[in-house]
Length: 435
Image 1 (spheres, one colour):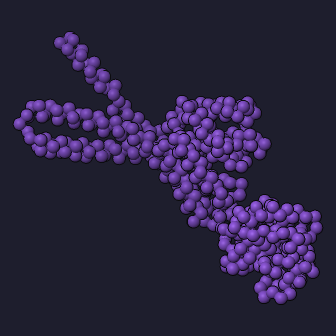
Image 2: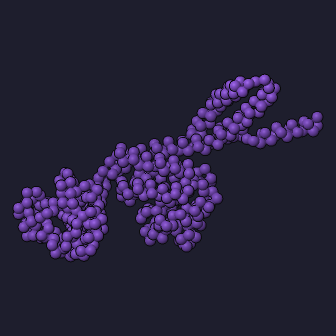
């Protein structure tokens, strides 16, 4: 029984390769069923994001597993193995467990510390459980991975610093104003950067979000998503006095907010106006920053913050690796004990079978015993067996977690092998035969 991880990600394959293996929600059941049909695979789960398509599982053995999985992927996606084989990574046991923990903790992410992977990780397991593709071992692995992820985030600063332009803009607004619950935010533009900024500001908590865009329908769509309001683009300057924070993210080739326009807006304002221009080229005149009570930041200002935060996250990631490795070692010990549990069960079953036979003979020779007396004798024998087997059980578990070659475990497996019962039976038959 071995844990494995196989797949491709942004480190091993370019996007043009990764996108060919993206697993949609409607395909998850099919791919899990096909992989579950591989003889050696006992449990399996798939994690498919924009940066990775990876499969985690448990196998009875991994000797030919990589090739078996490649064949399934090749057939399902109609892509020859030679086309993608060099982009596939394949890990087993400690390396696989470490990889799963690093993915869940966002230490393997393109942006270290990004929070989205936790939800994606949880969702992948939920779907695998829905299709009955996971059982005891993977359930424990995923639960532990999520616990490690939480421990890494709470014990380090890996996710405390903004590392995207949109997120940095939102946190910068919070840093300037403190509490944003009484602040109105105006988003100019409705593209991806603008949408991310709205999402982050909404999560932080603001009074109201207004969206303006040249295409009014897009402004309405984005505003409705966050219970906001849409402003027609030609009414933008009229509305500006109502805004506390303005985030500009459009594709306009020249400034749409000029110094003279903003000067009129702030003429009678008591509170400062905070403007973040994340457009390229810039959509707000640089001279706006000269106005009293106006704070203008552009994408370069935010990029400086982001770059600094990325370096801090890398330092925190080093601390996180120590936490992670300690948890990996603990999980491996648990897994090793699971591997000897069948041996412990077989020894106890053997002892129970001897107990039952001895009790049967005893009660046959002592028919006068009451049910209460028989019960007491049975309890005494069970207690004796438990005490006798306690030391061997602890010994096996200790050796399973401390010995590299499992030499002592193999001795006990041989000692309690059913073949010795066969030999005993053969000797008894020979004795009867030759008298």
